Image 1 (cartoon, one colour):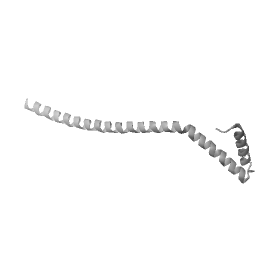
Image 2: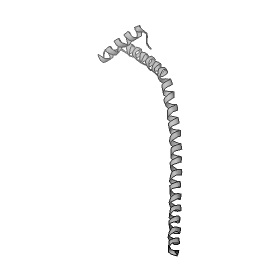
Image 3: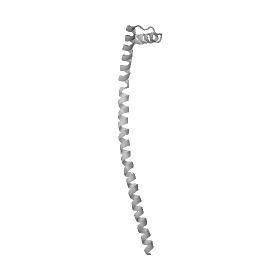
Image 4: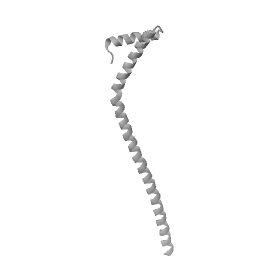
Length: 98
């Protein structure tokens, strides 16, 4: 990420910041180094972020499919309950005729 010289300077500036002895140009330098680090981290992490986003989309699609299947299963259960109720009614009617 940073060169050895930049890391040393970054550490020095961080220490001066902690000691509250940074001047404005040093603060700008520290801010610049932080931006460099953040940019490099973003570049490094981007493939992992993209992979996680793709996994999220895949899981979301699977969840949507599962919701559809769940609704279909509930409709099937309701249908089978109606068929069973009708069969029980018919069975009762047949037994009363015998």
